[in-house]
Image (cartoon, rainbow, N blue to C red; front, side, top):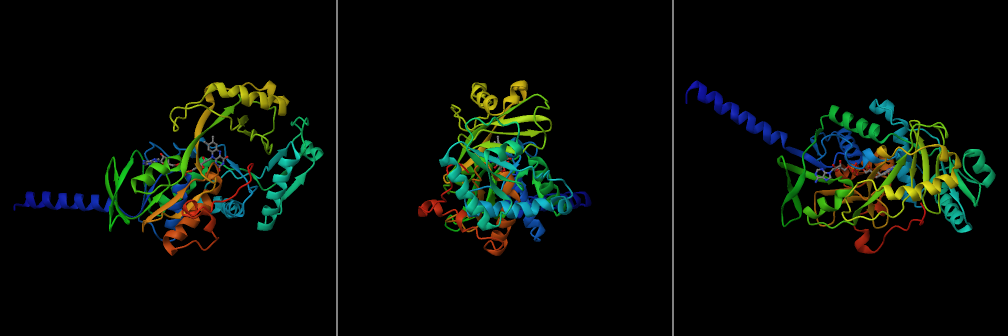
Length: 409
Ligand SMILES: Cc1cc2nc3c(=O)[nH]c(=O)nc-3n(C[C@H](O)[C@H](O)[C@H](O)COP(=O)(O)OP(=O)(O)OC[C@H]3O[C@@H](n4cnc5c(N)ncnc54)[C@H](O)[C@@H]3O)c2cc1C
């Protein structure tokens, strides 16, 4: 072999070894939304930095994370969800110091408004759970209190409610960016524009050894499914069924307006889930009304839905009659619903090295800090130690032991 041939051989060997190295990781995370990024960061923080995050979007936030309104609340009706919120809140409070980016956490509060004894009863029962777990800032409020907290609300038909001052808002894309950039600084590789299309299983189909993608094969020690509303499809590639289905949610946005203040608490009517908040000088209106669809992953904004949301908005917050809707900027996105509306967190049944962080059911941004921390513990220590996550175990559906949340929160 002459000198040139030796050089070419050595060079191609080097390129080949780099490719092997580049396409191998201790952990491959599928999905670079806020949950995948949080898991990557928490793994790297613990010294596990041979981590690759794969996302088919062209840039961060193209999944549900970029579509979220950015609500944060501790007002849930089950202990595990309240604890997840408290763990996440601890992390949000020191987010800027730890990660150098403002998470946007503003404690403007969440105001739940009941219009019947039945609805108030559900809020009261949830309040007992919240207080038992350590949320001391939640209080029951009378109709007069409600009008003090949010003077824009029309009092007709109001019965009472609850208010929690530590609830409020976060910036979903800031939280995603904070985790992603810090994980990258710790050595994690994020690759966009790459789609996971399957897995190679070995050991009697009990172990994933390769992730098959549109950009080749990635060798892996473990795999995390953090694919949001698409998690069911990813799990099926590994022969695992998880009860996660997409649910389209729409947001109406007004043109810039001053009819409501920027620090107005999130204001939610328990009866039908209609809620409103102000973000960057515009009002966001949400209402989980039925939207007909052919394709359950479709996120086209359905303008017919506007009539229902606006009739509610104008009755309940009459000043909104003066705020025109900016139809061109209204949008839709997907919730990742699990059967009992709770996250599915832990190792997938039947596989040694496949982990799930799915099914947050519309609360995934606010719970991402806690979910990332806990799944890193499961992967590195064999179980979560910071809090008990038994209620989120993936096997609960097959066992017939699902969580029982209130119908309202
Ligand atoms: C209208 C709306 C309002 C919301 N408001 C709130 C709120 O106020 N507070 C809150 O906490 N939550 C809210 N949510 C829910 C929140 O957005 C989700 O719970 C959260 O973003 C889930 O994060 P994720 O990382 O799991 O999912 P995603 O952000 O969807 O990330 C999953 C990623 O997986 C990638 N992916 C999928 N399939 C593949 C594949 N085959 N190969 C490679 N990559 C793949 C996608 O590209 C995507 O980027 C809202 C959601 C919507 C739609």
